[in-house]
Image (cartoon, rainbow, N blue to C red; front, side):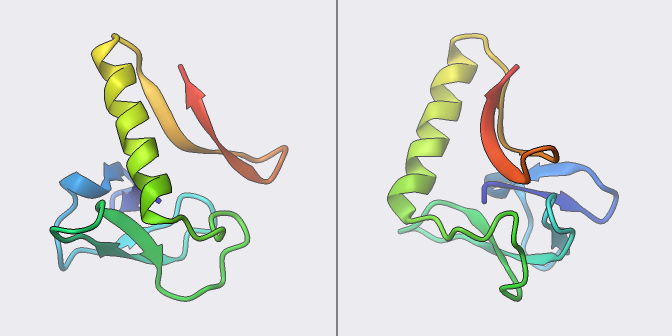
Length: 97
């Protein structure tokens, strides 16, 4: 996932997150780990595989695609919200507000 919440409940984008800080899944509220590097898109991964909400495991191509789409939409003046959790459907979706 590209977004997680910090200890103050603020939404943080993975490429802006800092190593060593605690982050949490916005769906299950379980702790997630920041994963970043030169060869992969920065993202958060669940510390334990206990999340039924954001557990589908995304490939690096999928993460890059979401990042590219988000960047393009922002350049077009849109305010995309990726990984919005829709409680009524128990799923996450890409939402453009």
